[in-house]
Image (cartoon, rainbow, N blue to C red):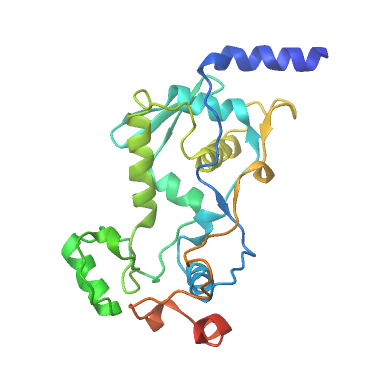
Length: 249
């Protein structure tokens, strides 16, 4: 072990003891931009997803020292719907506006602000408009997407992030929640504050280290495709999608 590495380990241990560190697991996977699927319906979902205002949130990542990721979750607390945390023992605050900027989630409709999330009744009406006429017992029974309003999707993610911070001390596992978004937050503040040490290249978590979402299977064995009862609204597509083989199938 050389002196530089020994000193780095000592600095890291002073920030977060090894016993208090979380395992960086497979949650919060990154989506492959070139993802292809043999099943037409799923490929169509991928194509439609690329048109949404929150698509970049599935792909965004960063290269940061792992110790700052650990320090975030070791020190994070919720205060007035913002998250207070430390990086290199320096206090920082991240809120929804910062989070939306980091994930590059912009309004789909120009010159309109983000709207409040819809109530259950409005969501059900929208699903009916899409052509879903089956029984809906829960909102999660079907999936839909608004195309006439600037729905604040970043708020949905932020709400769960807040929940995880509030309940981090009661969770049963030692796995880190939202590791990819944690990296994005760390990188955001490292960029804003050049006084935060970059250390050396020891123990960094790179974008290439993210677990990748590579495939999904929703059809039964020996079947070629999956049939769905709801009609895909034209507002969710474009000409290229409508001319694709997946759409036609």
